Image (cartoon, rainbow, N blue to C red; front, side, top):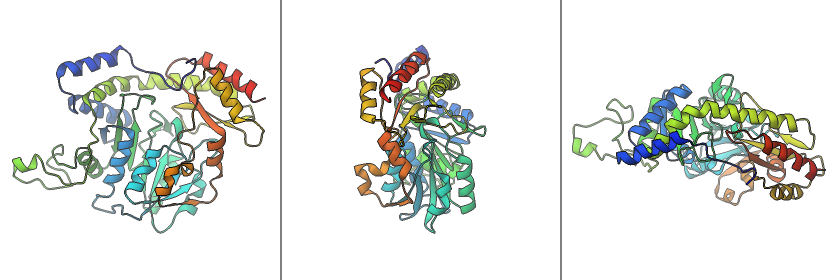
Length: 389
């Protein structure tokens, strides 16, 4: 394809890392996963980093852990404030643990939660806010953190689309009580499948670590705050304390992650150079609403919303993109409220969900890659200019 949605960011380093794992004969999580976790923790300046099988399982294990903390655990029926646009597995663990969702609209230009509606969204049952930075663009994390601190709420930060982004010099994914990252194929680093949960809270970390592997105690230190070890080694080796999962990553993913993380900064720099060209070509054209950068975006992709005040036919635009061999897709998951699965949720909406519907009906994104895309972006401009006349 002339301009695809994603491409591999691997080089010889990742292939060699895989060979080393294969030659070792150890494939389930071990030394390489530990090395990746250590490197990730140091890179993002957090106390704890836990690698799991995907960003989705990072969300699942993270939400689950908050139901088992000793002080102020979440309970079924508690309310959570969420943005109307995100990926499906931002929301699924909330539903699966019996939480009630309060959907807030997004800003049309940043695509992130409209934080001016936070006070309206708050009720006596509110216990948590989920922050999502859409497609590399930091949401108002400073505002959300301050709001949660004032109200005694958890801040859960789903940063699966925005590794390498920052706000006020602080890495996105580190503002929340829990932050989650994804290392899926098309994301800022790729370990095939994979994800990371980060936190500065040791209790949450140990809960998540137990839940990652069946809810057992085997991987926990003796001084953990979440249970008391007994002097029965035979029993302790298979002692289950939490209703956990198998969310363990593979050694292959850990070894690849170590190499990919070394390249993260340089790959983000290339993505940002591509973004400057995209902005130069599109930001002053009233036919198109493009994402306004808040803080320092890691530019997962390039979004285009056809101006709802102008008569531009999205079907015609999409046909032109297809004919030009340019890949495109819905922005993240679109307005989640528009998907069939919403019938299984306990939820309500805060005010009108207007902008998320515009994004759903008139938006799309094209890819950004850690390589020079000048010819592709310039061709995109030509195609959209012609199709939107």
